[in-house]
Image (cartoon, rainbow, N blue to C red; front, side):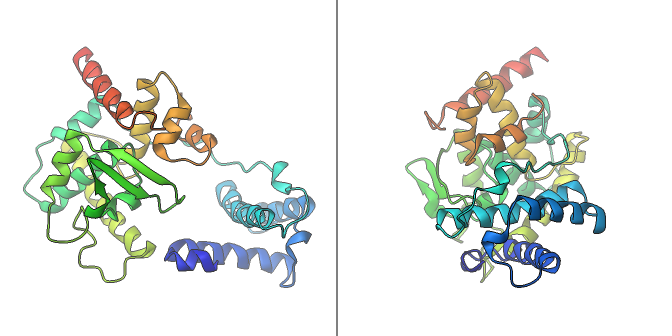
Length: 291
């Protein structure tokens, strides 16, 4: 918890705090980590589902926080038992990840928007997330000019801490050049913010998502368009462009586990830092000609 707070991830801190207080209310306050075993966790799972009437997704989310702490305890040689989560499968609802088709992506890129800066910014921000190999919106909004090094975006993911090096394609460079403001950030959303933290970032992304709903109407896209859809869209098209090479796509996305990438591609690496996006853009052009 101290590490999370020190990283200025205040939203994550609150989520962990809420989940741990809920667990404490069930177990009592003086619970040592080594008393957290399979039987206790299964009883807690039933308590969340049956007594608190939590959904399956909420239940799994709460258990995942305990799993993170157990894993940290194992790494620190504090938790000495067999990991109970080797036997506990966290289930989530099988919701399809919203994504754009190649045709919808082209329409979004070329849509004629009214001269409203917020709408144009939202569209460009979405396209930048997609073109930067599905970079998370939270990472893109905090991206600074100093992260541009020799034609690459070089940054550390806020969620995983993984170091990323992503080639700036001509299309991405064109967008970045449109926002060469006097501030330190590539996009001007945080330039006037004194204390940049997770809560501020999420509030700015909420605004972007609000504007993207309007952008979608102009582009004739009848889907719930959010900043994160750019990441899902990249994943889907990257799998097509690489003939389903999920490990290559995993490396581009910066997922710590291929299982996470599989969740993104439920419906169906930068070995060369520019290869995937180049192949995707070629695929989009081919599909566009066929349509």
